[in-house]
Length: 627
View (cartoon, rainbow, N blue to C red):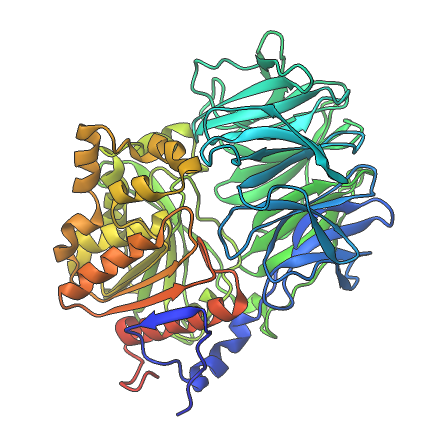
């Protein structure tokens, strides 16, 4: 039987070759595309989107609804972000190399990039000034640790100047005041604590406009044309609300109606008359259009059920969003802010498969070991095709400040539709979307394992589910979800069949010591401080590597050599330790990837290896020759 050629950048150990027949069967599930809204172009009112036709996501323009996607960038690395100047004469793009996340800023014209930043450090785009003359951005170039703030005319890279030497890696530019003389900036300290400032560009004066001594999550903020600051925050609230911040008094006035859910994103129209905002309602996104003058607030009803992954307002008022859902690949929709009429602008390919076949998201809610309410989304195979109890895979999100939501599942639909495997996406304590109290329940080393115990409670729940085979439950996850995967294997190996972790943490101390310097203090705020002897001892005590002898099932590990967040050494040490205990380990290391794979040839091969792994160790459908 012929085997699939392995990409040169991948180092694969322990796993068998991939049969061509498996690749043939899975291929349609690997061909789903996405259209991520990136902005608008004023000259022809084209919508800018990021999508992939070759190996990597690139910038495209769509001139009208369901029009052709015209490619504008042609790079060998991903385009990670785009901003069009208000004057429509300059496109700024953000791109890294090999998944390193050391992003550079460029102008894009006639298919060519011109470097703005230094080509070495980590740079994050902030905003254009209202007149389009300047951009503001953050950079780690001074020492690799602190995120200093810069302004530059992107047409003339030599005009750049540092306007703030900051302390810490969490500083960013959010916008310019209408007169262009000051920057609205944020200092992010932790998911639950941030502060806003106005920075004088010429004089360098930094003026706090929020209380720096109080832990408040200022998540997003933007300056309106009238100079008012609109923001989302959790001041005197368990959830994020949208409102107006008075820079003089530092008082926040909520504008959105009382809701039990977060306002997760918003945008202002260029004239300041309209605000589009998104509510995260039990994981599903609800788009609202708010008329600023009258206060009239309307919910948009015509969008597919799912998650709004991007939001942009055109200079002429149209609201563009990317929506992804279990039966909707990530696609662009445009809303008329007056009539609320919804028009689909892209129809991304799904490999010829009918997305209506995909399983719906079933909300599962339980009381955990201590009575805390936790939940997640379950996707079941079609019972008419797959009768009886089915294998189940837990897929745990990263972050840990993230949230499993009803997105399009891509190749995971092969597991559900073709292999009859149920997949469950839990939101353990510490997940976003359930208020700041819930978000803080896993903070620090002494509460960390409570989130792992939530997985144990979910295992208990599914053990009594007639649609689940309790003898065939496995766990997977990426980043923090990789840590959770390994920690679950430590605590529950007697109840799990196998595990697959991607770019995960195996030792919390070595992770904190080796993650990139610009993010180390930000991660200490979440996990704990390894420099403190008491916390260090606890971090070691809850690290999966410390208890590797308790892992008693096969393991698969996937990692990128250029990962700046969770270094590849985290994967190397757990692979060596598990193999030393005599257990089977499949491993994939990509020389040209970072924190998650983005190159199609790498993702395709690794996905097929994971499917083969689940066939071998979970469903039992693989044969000794690999298929």
